Image (cartoon, rainbow, N blue to C red; front, top):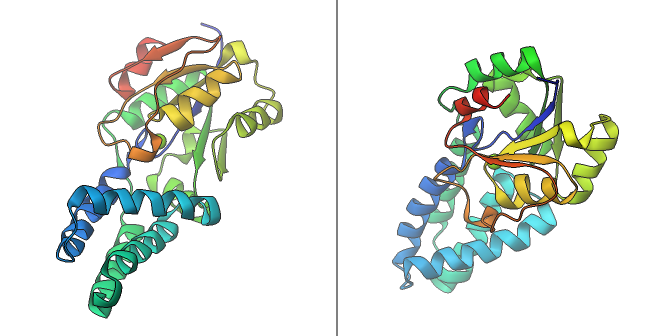
Length: 228
Ligand SMILES: [Mg+2]
């Protein structure tokens, strides 16, 4: 097989990520529920607050922490308690310290792929936070480059293709998010491998739109071996 360039997503593709956020969100909603709102309403306000803060502060644990705090203050109003804010803050700090939990089959599959193809890790988020996760994962040695952007869009995919002189017909984006990994990559003519993760973040949900390239859907990362 010809050597391909494989752009590989990190969060919820190489390691668990969103499940830790979801756990905190569930506990947060339980804390806020006593103010008299339904769980789905609290989640709705949190999602809206996150959308707004991501535009201003980007992705990452700190932006998330700010969204939790703002959501609480908005819903609790004059009933807001300093202890609850302190508790939320502690949980956010713990979240930032959580070591990456590598998904099943990932290291051996990367070892196989890197012998045959050029691998570039492509992730979005807060640069220092993402770089620290990559380092702690112990997986960076499998990649020729680590690319961290603030948003995965058709523009950032285009820049990556130019920078690394990727031949689109032989370039693949591999990830769990239709919104960030599959759709923008396919829109600019790359191929894509969609590996759904059951805990993909709500803000990443989007119908998969096909493009001119090939689209492969796999149940698990280790299945990449059969395709590359
Ligand atoms: Mg991801």
